[in-house]
Image (tube, rainbow, N blue to C red; front, top):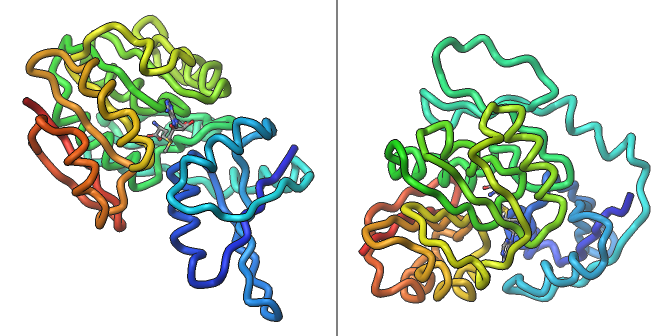
Length: 271
Ligand SMILES: C[S@@+](CC[C@H](N)C(=O)[O-])C[C@H]1O[C@@H](n2cnc3c(N)ncnc32)[C@H](O)[C@@H]1O
C-alpha cells in the first residue's frame, strides 16, 4: 500500500490539509520537522500514480509530493477510533464495521469507505447531506457527482428519491458505493459508474457535487446542463471565503440557500 506524502511549509499545512480532505482522503497525519520547519502530510489517495497526479493537479496550489510504501496494518488503525456522526438530529452516519447505534427512529446510514472519501464526518459531506434533506422530496431523481463512498446517493434514496445515479472519476468508488447501497437496503435505486459528467445525458431534479471549488468551476456548464427545469443544484467542497467565484460560474442559477460549517460552505441553487 502506498502513502501519499505532501510536503509544505508550516504556514501552508492547514490549507494543504483542507485541500487534501476535499480531494477524498480519509485521514491525514502531520509530521513536523523542527530542524527544517517543513511539514509532511501523510495520507492516501490510492496506489494509482496517474490518478493521484491528476487529482493533485486539480488543486489551487502545486505542493511537492511523493509516494512511500506503508504497512497496511498500521494504516488501518484509524478504524478503531472511528465514531458515528450526527448530521441532523434525525440523521446519523456510522462506521459499517460497528453495530448500529441504539438511537431509535432516526435514519442511520452505515458506511464502509474502503479506499474512497465519504465516512460522512467531513464538514463538506455533513453540509451536503443537510442540503439534500431539504431538497429531496419523495420521488425525485438525483445525480451525485463525485460520489466517493456513495454516502450522498444513498442518503438521497433514504430521504425518498426514486433513484440516485452516482458517478466518480475514481474507479474505487464503484464497488464501494455498490456495497454500501446493498448494506443500506437501496441497491435497487443507486446506480454507480465512472461515466464522466460530460457524458451524462439525463436530467435530474436534484444534482449534488461535493468537490473542490476549482473542479466545480470546471464542471459548471455540465452541472447546469444535467439539472432538470425547476431542479436544485447543491455544491459543497467550497472554502467559505471562495464561494463567490463558484456562484459566478453557476449563473444564471440563483442562490436558494447557503450553509456553513468549520470554514466550509455548501450552496443550493435553482432557477
Ligand atoms: C470530497 S469527495 C466527496 C465524496 C462524497 N460525495 C462525500 O460527500 O463524502 C470528492 C469526490 O469527487 C471525486 N471527483 C473529483 N473530481 C471529479 C470529477 N471531475 N468528476 C467526478 N468525480 C470527481 C473524487 O474522486 C472524490 O471521490
